[in-house]
Image 1 (spheres, one colour):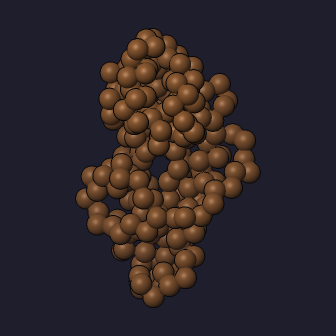
Image 2 (cartoon, rainbow, N blue to C red):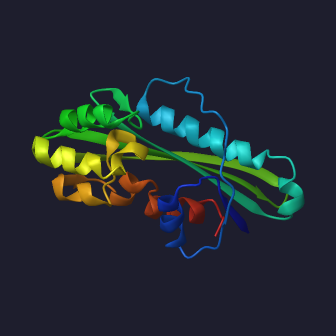
Length: 196
């Protein structure tokens, strides 16, 4: 079985490597289209779009003959039913983090596995949700973190594996899910679907 990760995220690549499987990286460049409103449905839909983009990519069959599994994933941060994407600038990052400080929000990651095994195509999609609670955060700490530039390329304006970890009070659920890929669940799904 060949494995393809349809993501350029170094964090997802690092997490997937912990499963012990060897994989190729072919990032999806598809323009994401959200048609759902429920967070779990949104991440599942986006993960499916990314995996489908690579699976249907012209030349994939020539490059990877035989059995192949494409792994697509998408992560969103949600607070009170509002999706918090990547901040446009430092001001928006400050607003997001101020809103999340001393409160609990949710992180959803959707994963889609599109497999061709013995010339038969199958698709499996699932999601994980993790509750993250922050401590109160001072203005000084927020400005210090934002000035590092770290929040500007991250949904919700923070990376839990980076410097903002000092403000995390509690996590309920899978930590790796917050980083960007619930590898425990992914490994179990790959086993259940006969892909390992």
